[in-house]
Image (cartoon, rainbow, N blue to C red; front, side, top):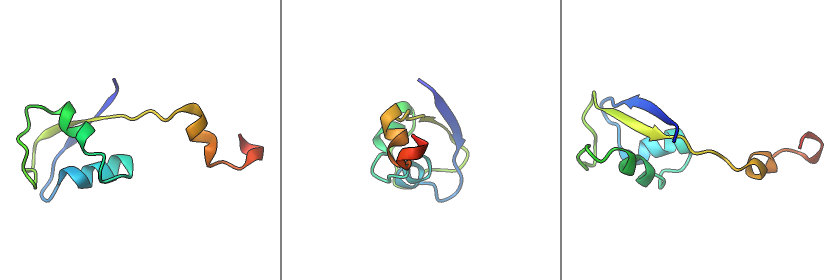
Length: 71
């Protein structure tokens, strides 16, 4: 599994990180599961290294938004 390292800063929250990396604030469960040693708090302390799993798009999903002549 590919991951991106993220160092938290003041005001970071699980849902905001999911929005930043996935475009979906409800997808934070993937980030929580990848970081079992981080305490569940509404606002994360700054300076914590988190692993953000990279979500691979399916091939047809990646081209679905393209016009037919670019697929």
